[in-house]
Image (cartoon, rainbow, N blue to C red; front, side, top):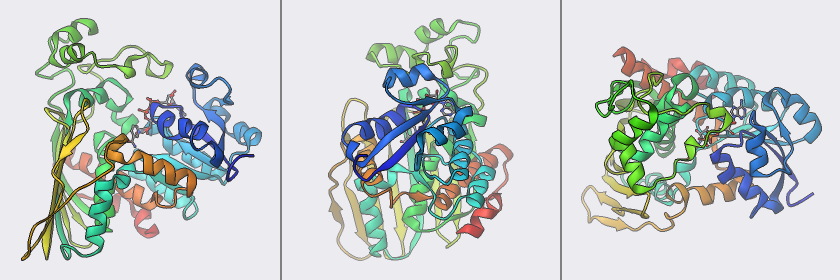
Length: 403
Ligand SMILES: NC(=O)c1ccc[n+]([C@@H]2O[C@H](COP(=O)([O-])OP(=O)(O)OC[C@H]3O[C@@H](n4cnc5c(N)ncnc54)[C@H](O)[C@@H]3O)[C@@H](O)[C@H]2O)c1
């Protein structure tokens, strides 16, 4: 037995799982635990990663637990598989660490909250671990701008990154919850963590404007994928930049080749939301998935000042942007430089993995916090589809009780 003796099972040998769970566990954190089993429908993919790993199909979860005797389940399959994996782990009394989003619907989030023991399920919302975001959290907790009144957050996802969501399972709402859950849960978790508050109500508007069959960039719905790719600006840019297309490697799960103008795409690619928090603060948020640059602009207003920052991170270069700027209401502006942002996801992944394997992930989001991020994402989508404001608390009644 190595290190602290933890025995990890992994559900989903995804690209994400390889980078933050499997490779660290088999490499730098090997002394902190063993990867004793992998559950994934694609046996070849697991063997391709490491043919010494014990493989199980998802239907063999109970046998996996009996054979491998894990104490912790790492969940990193496609989002819609999280709920079943978490519930299987909970049923067997395992500690569960899940990738974001915890689940894809508020109803499933409520199910997890109802059945898991306190602290049993935690979610790897990695943006909390980015040095820039930890600095902002510290300033807010110290009262640097007084009581927070509102957060302005504009997030841009550049063309190639944004398009990648529309060629994979993420593009179907039943598999991802829509980008409002799949992607924006990152941002909703971050804002909730900064505020130490939970969302009450949301009003949102959104559409699908860049991708899907009606895209203005679609060179012809009747054309084969190869011709669409050759003739459309996204495809031409991929080719010009020689960008790697890992999502088209043809893993069994991914099935036939998919492209960004397919008719089955049913998620939105741009939306804006106004969120009211229980404590009275508000968030104005927008995101687009086909932007000329990737990054965000943030402002946080408080009774005694304002915090501002902005960040651009290209695929070819490191992050560039403003420092974190603190404007006391009546004092001198203070610029605070941020270090350590070069690693994965704005420097978040390294500290997250370290804490996960050396401190049992003590600072990870708990199941209730993760549930709020899912419920707010669902609320944003529902509101933009119906045109009505959504009561987020009502979507997650059980979570309210648990908080
Ligand atoms: N925190 C982050 O920054 C971040 C970044 C990327 C992805 N993610 C999350 O990581 C997870 C994986 O995403 P990805 O894009 O790397 O996935 P992926 O498409 O690379 O891989 C999915 C894997 O899950 C397997 N799978 C399919 N059905 C399964 C089931 N029922 N049980 C177990 N495994 C199953 C597939 O065979 C495949 O190996 C998602 O939840 C995603 O939201 C998080």
